[in-house]
Image (cartoon, rainbow, N blue to C red; front, top):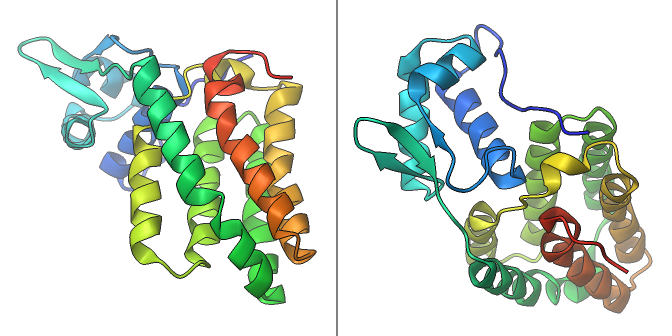
Length: 222
C-alpha cells in the first residue's frame, strides 16, 4: 500500500527545501508519474504552505531535470525512458560495485558502526512507510559508503546519476516483503565488508542497484 510523501510540513523548517525533497521523492518513487502536470497552488494546498516556496522548489527541480515548465499551466514531470534507466543503472553498477573490494580491505570499526546507524534508518523508514525518509536515508548511506573509497569525483558522479534515476514502482512497494528485503540488504552489505569479503560485497551491491530495473520498476525478480 503506497503512502503519499506530499502532505503538510512542519512550521519552522526550510519550506522550499522540504517541498523540494518531498516532490523529488514523489517523482523518483512514481507517486507523481512521468507526464503528470502539477501547479504550485495545488501543491501548496497539499503541503499547507504558500505558493512561493513551492514555486522556488519546482524551479530548482526544473534545473535538476525532474520537471519542465509548461507556460501558463504549471510543471510537468519529465520522462525517463527505459533505455535511459537501463544506461543509468549499468553505469551505477560499474561505478559503485567494484569499490566494495577496496572498502572491504580498509573498513574501520568506527566507520562500520556509522554505516550501521544509516542502514537502520533505512530499515526503520521502510517499516514506518516513510517513503521520503527511505529515499533520503538510502542516499546518505550509499554516498557515505562510497566516500570511504576516497574519490570525491566518483561520489559526485554517483550522486548525479541517482538524481536521474526513477523507481516508478517504489510507491507501491510500501509494506511489502521486497521493500523490507531491500532495506535489510544494507546491513548485509556491512556484514560482508566487515568480514573482508570484497567479492561478496561487490556482488550484493550489483544486485542491489539492479532492483531499480526490477522491483522498483514494478517487475518481479527471481
